[in-house]
Amino acid sequence: MKRTLILFFALFCTSVMAEQVSGLYNGRVLVADQTEQSRSKGVNQALEQVLIKLTGNSKIMQLPGIQKAVSNTNNFIASVGYTKLPARLPADLSEEPANQPGFSLQVSFSAQAIDQLIRWAQLPILPAGRPKLVFWIVRDDAETGRQFVTEQQFPDFTQRFEQIMQDRALPYQLPELDLEDQLSLSVNEAWSMRNETIEVASQRYAADGWVLLRFFTTTSGQVRGSWTYKLGDQRGFDDVRAENTEVFVGLAVNELVDRISAQLTYVPQVDTSKLLVQINQVDSFADYQAVLAQLQSLKLVRSSNVSAVEGSRLFVTVDIDGGVDLLISALERSGRLVNQTSEMARFSGNLEFDWMVE
Image 1 (cartoon, rainbow, N blue to C red):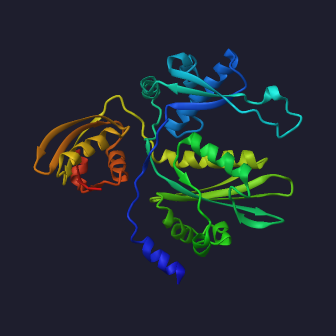
Image 2: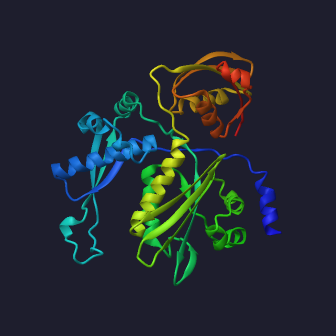
Image 3: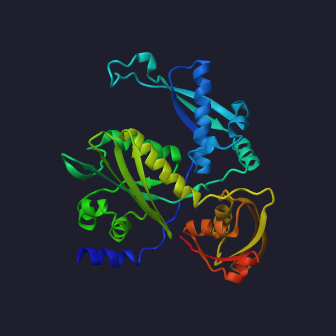
């Protein structure tokens, strides 16, 4: 009965708004000191962080020509700063203090220079409006059995997981695992990857999609696991193997985010596509400003100009990178624009949306 009620309410949930991610041009790495050698290495790592965040590809630096294109990092730096880290005792007493990071190096890169690099190299772009995912993580242990991974019970795992997700700049949430979660999704159901049950349990978090990650350690010490996800109409599954838990979470999460990001990215074109977007129900100047701000916030919109205002209808000409479908998807994910475009109008480059007042 409980499941039936949850499913009933889930069917009437409205679509959620994609989150606008900030700090995409900023990188942060840990360095031992403030020497030129540490600074140079740290800046390279920070630049790699930024390119991964912007493109959604953890292997972006392996593409031909990229290493050479970014060899002079001074062409991309806007500012550099250090923060002293508090002293700590090494977890391994054999670790020398000199090997511990002493500073946090924060690097801000020029958005214009990075965007020029991306356009020149024809790299994919992951828009700043990104879907939010709820992660269900299950560990199977020979002694304790199957358990949902929590920060309290598995602090090292969750800390590593959260750091990777922050580095990838993809919004996420770990479930509360309270009584409501326990009633809607048992640990055995999660381990069995029962998609419909996971879907229902995830509805309470108002996320755009969900992920189930499971893993166990073999008698030889190898960590094995798999993940599955659902985001809109997209689904995915893969198996992962690693020599230890820390390596496993890095491989699993990065491969997962790469797979999801590949469905959301676009490659900026030298020649942009010009479209006419009609927005209905723009009834006030505040609505007018909000619509223009929404369009200008989209990374794939290079420029926008008001063509006409007819009553409550606003007509805007936009130049975009990528395809029409990407623009439609981005506007729909804003949560305030309802697509009314006919198939024929879409092919002619004329889009129509209704504006929803908050």
